[in-house]
Length: 92
Image 1 (cartoon, rainbow, N blue to C red):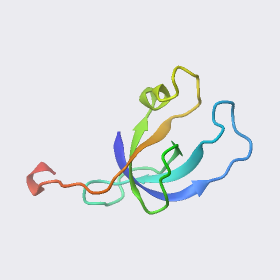
Image 2: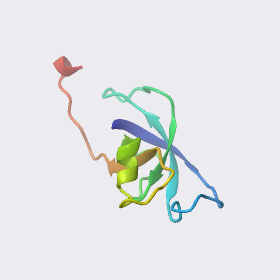
Image 3: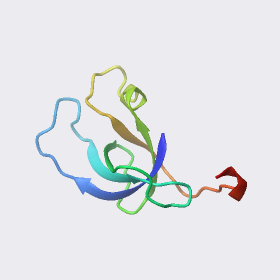
Image 4: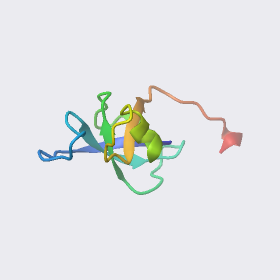
């Protein structure tokens, strides 16, 4: 999993089966100082994240597990909207 910030949306009227009713968001990974940290990804969102929000993103097989055994072509899934976090200076 990684921490990210939603920076945009992707609209696709034609999607693979199993992706119906999934919102697609552009997420910029960030570190715990909220600085950009990696390449942007497109992540599926079922929980209603919006542009500007910090989110937790799961990638790979764990992201697909959320679909109850259905084979869905998802590589990244927003699994949480972050209200706040705290990291001590020594932990970085």
